[in-house]
Amino acid sequence: MTAEAQHVLSDHVREEIDHWVAKFPEGRQRSAVIAALQAAQHENQGFLTPEIMDAVAAYLDLPPIQVYEVATFYSMFETKPVGRHSISVCTNISCMLRGSDEIVEHI
Image (spheres, rainbow, N blue to C red):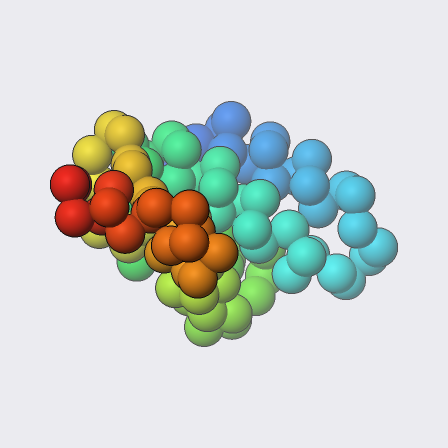
């Protein structure tokens, strides 16, 4: 772990990451990326910065791109500041058949 990762990630986040890394076989720390990002995002008012993602990568001894791929692929991760509460409306066909398009119009 680099000094930067230790500075950027709080003790609580590092403990949370260690908890998840311990659940996977040796050398499979990449499996803990989602949990690590969730913990880091929670501590940073709901969004991830490039510095945080780099620190997570350094802490897990992974190339930063592997962390960026996860953070930008999953909709549960935010890379910009967001409000405290987030409202999502399902817009696939089964939801639209149940009236989600009316909710979207109303919002």
